Amino acid sequence: MNQHDIPQPVWITTNAELANSCQQWLNEPFLALDTEFIRTNTFYPIAGLFQVADSQHSYLIDPLEIDEWQPFADLLTHPNVIKVFHACPEDLEVCRRLTGVLPSPLADTQIAAALAGLGSNLGFQKLLEEILDIHLPKEETRSNWLQRPLSDNQVIYAVADVHFLYQLYPKLVSMLQTLGRDEWLMEDCQRLLLQSDRADQPEYYFKRFKQKWKMKAQQLFLLQELSLWREHKARQENVPRNNVIDSNSLWNMAFYKAQTKEQIIQSGVKPYLVRKYKDELIPFIENRLTVGQKKWPPLAARPLSIGAGKLYKAIKKTVKSTADTLNIPAELLAGKKSLEALLRSGYPDGTYELPPGLLGWREAVIGHKLLDQLEATQAKHTESQHDENIV
Image (cartoon, rainbow, N blue to C red):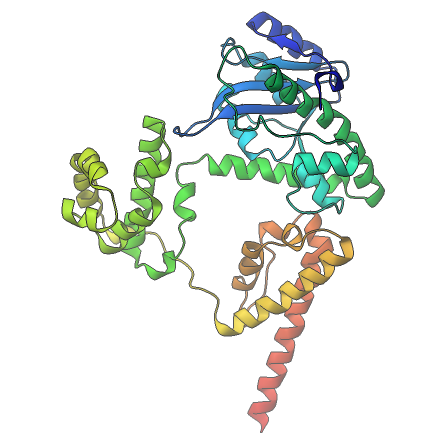
């Protein structure tokens, strides 16, 4: 790709220019957006560039020069303008960091491509080749977006992302409309916003620890509290979580109830980090170990039993068959967490209920089918037990 393949960008480097542009963009039905940022040794992403494309131009917003983001925040939340990104979870973090809001309504072309039957987790370059027959190199992906001036190649790369994204989106929407799935896209993007909002909550990362089922209630409480402590510390110091304490060491500290410098080191925490945090961390742990059991969390769910595991394989097979018929990824139709939550709602002899992940458009497409399958299996099991009792 060369410089003549894309238009020259309109630079936005002042608060007034941004405010004027935002007022103009309110008249657009949708905007293509992208961000460039650096996040190597910080908790929060450092924005280096914000790109926007509308029906007329492509724009480069310089976050190093602008300090009044309210007009842009108002635009991002305006209900009449769809904000289009590709694979946007990290872009959402940049938006939140700069403006304090998440873009809504949102459309993610990676999700759109999967729903249209083009494949799972499709990269932007691959999607451009599939839909627009355009080859977009990605040499500048990891370059320094905080340098000024940006190189010519960086500018071309940044503009190309939104310029072609603006062309891509209507074609994907047309494909989804033909399939009757355009509402699926908006629903899944709204779900993505809710997930991003939950992920920003400090307590979210306690839920991500694996093997919590091995812990007793007090150990779980200590892990929960240590996770919150690490989250606040990482945000306060603006460093990655593992620069405070890595997750494996944090789990060990909670499991073994480490209370001394030596025990914390034995848990896997690097000595220099122990020296840095011990005067705060040791009293913190000692205090939490005196908290009564009324504040302890419930025990974590154990892995599925052998019987439930067999049933999981059966319903997963139904999901795969249905997804193949729809030509969409099985994990997009019903993920592992949703299927496990469905089984836990009723196994072994209760009434099954659809979890949130199987509601919305999925309820009609796969949810009722899975409930019918589980009900039939339950009825067959009950009948078998009845026959055994008669004998």
